[in-house]
Length: 125
Image (cartoon, rainbow, N blue to C red; front, side, top):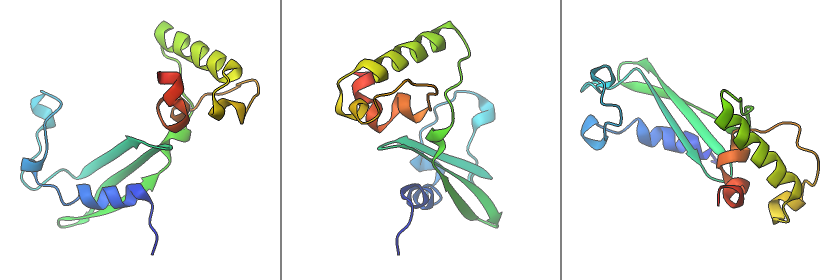
C-alpha cells in the first residue's frame, strides 16, 4: 500500500507524548495537556510544501488529513511581501536555473510553495 508522505507524518505525530515536544510559543494558552490537543498540524517543505492536520475522532484516536497546501496563492500583506513577490517573479522569469528553464514564461501567480520548497531553493539562496 502506498500513502502520502504527510499521512505518514501525521500518523507519527499522533503518537507523540507531550514530553516528546518542544514548546515554541511561550503563551500559557499554548500548553499541551497530558491527554493531547484536539487538533494538530504538520507542515514541511520538500519537493512541495506538504501539510496534514489531525483531528480527534473519538477517545485518543486521530484521523489524519494530508494536503498539498503549498499550492495556495502567496498573498501580499505588506511592503516586504510585495518586494519578495517582485524579486521572485523576476528571478523565475529571468533565471537560467534548470527549474525555471522548464517554465520560461511570465509569472502571473506565485504559490507559497514556489517561495519556500523544492524548486525555490535557488531562489532562497
